[in-house]
Length: 216
Image (cartoon, rainbow, N blue to C red; front, side, top):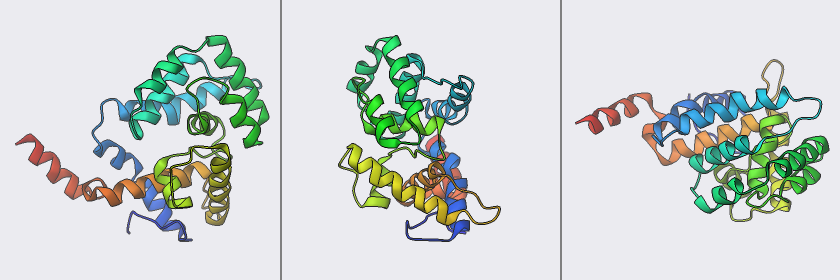
């Protein structure tokens, strides 16, 4: 089964294969701490946020680690980290409480978070996706290019168009016991894009050979 997908594809098995290859492709990037921060973002952070129901919020150290994940998985922009580290703890908690309370209204939720310096629509989408993956997909460059044709506009309008397309695709792929969230769709698109750029990251045998060459 090929582990890359075209956005127009309605083959749930192909999407599931691309999603299943996510962890392997992430590790193959061989970036410092990326696997650890990805585990924090996908597993630890959602549990922390859900544990704060009915009034969830994200704490500043958690936001900083989320940003580390976002920048490590994509393009590193150190200035953004400086902005986030300079934020007031209480302001981060207040803005995120309002954002989570606004869901499923993505426009309001994103707007509440982007009052924070250094937090644009993409970072805000990562915060929302950690709490509500069934509503808010992360605005990754790779998924944006595939779904919308470009990743140059980091605006609220662009995010809403992106989220709408991924929500629709998740609904299309969810048939019977086969369930997809918009966040599943985003990760599958990211995995597919990384696999297309680097064949070794999509093929366990090729990846093993590459590791062997590096050791020599």
